[in-house]
Image 1 (cartoon, one colour):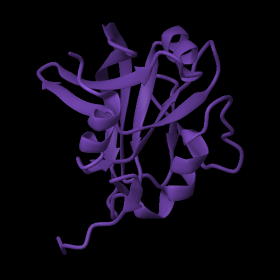
Image 2: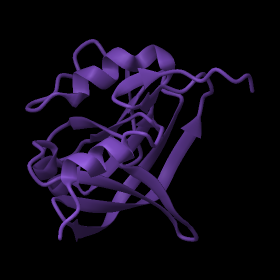
Image 3: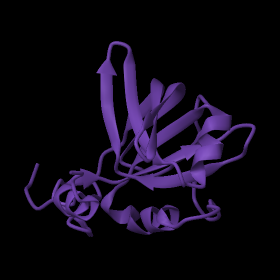
Length: 159
């Protein structure tokens, strides 16, 4: 008997995550998506993974460009998260962007970012898992934007 997907969603919604916007740039053009299915995979070599729904508009861009940047958002960037969370084409208008080593746009003002070259694309149920080798990155500081139980949240404990 398969586990109920609605129950899985509700349970996993109680796993607090950071909020990122994964961007890509290159021959297919710029694109981005809000993602919290992001994880550090390996330190040697330096790898991260991003899981992308097979129905996502972003999929073709990521596959063609073969790169992505994981932009870790600050509390002040909730509007950016909402902008890239909607289906369909994405609008970078009005955002301050920096060029990544790979050509993926970096969101200026983010808490931190990792710039990655895609090394593998693996099947994962109704998602594809993009494994990226980290070729650049920076930490800028600030308070992270969090997501928990279907809502944006903030940290309450001091550093």
